View: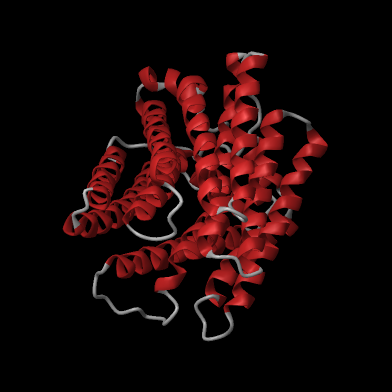
Length: 383
């Protein structure tokens, strides 16, 4: 396979800065989990007056935006690109301070703008549909942040944030599916889903109900495309880490399809149990499935630390989906205790993921002391 370019690019960036930014993303995640549980109804201290209302921005911008920005900066190997995760992490702190929230929103928006510029560098290397899709994903995050910054409601900004995560992941999966030699019709279906999603986000600024319904069609179309054409479906029989990653991704696509169906049937509300079920099907069921599946690949590449896959990873994957099923059922029945405990158990599943990840790193480090350390240019395992 040759030299792993991501490892070489990572080596050009200061390792302490990469660890600091990863720690900032994890801190935003923990703050978002705490805020989410308070919003659910758990009587825990708020720690900061604005923490509960900042749950969404902390999770999407503070955690996921910082994590994706860091991964892209490492992939490019450009120090200036670290400004993207740095600004999104800083903005996540600012929105919690007793100052006007516009300062935090502006800082996060600037971070997303840097990410778009960084992603656009990829187009100088190659014009390809998967690269255009990844750049579009970053642009949607920037657009959603602008929507938030200029005073539109959080639900309207969330439509663009959904696009950011879904389109970014779809672009990455399209890149890996190139080896399947997709037909022009298959690519046209992919583009059609993208176009419908963007139309739904834009329409949501003028007519939220119809915007959500149009976006739902795009989400459902993209989920079905990924279930049918993503290479993950062919990796389930591979065993080991490849099977774990494939199952994580396929489970996430099912949640995305469910969210599309739910939004199509009952979307258009800006609060309440259905809104809760819809958002968490995407941001927990879909997004964290992607994070769980790719963590054994991304974390070693970004931080340049060895990490061994272990079958124990299935515990946090299964626990996450079981708890989310409980929460969504509680939303839709409705049955408040199921929603309450489902949310808490989902947070525990994410904490279990962090524990299993740290344990896997330590296990690999102990094993490495007894063996020669691998060369930094050694290729990563195939996804």
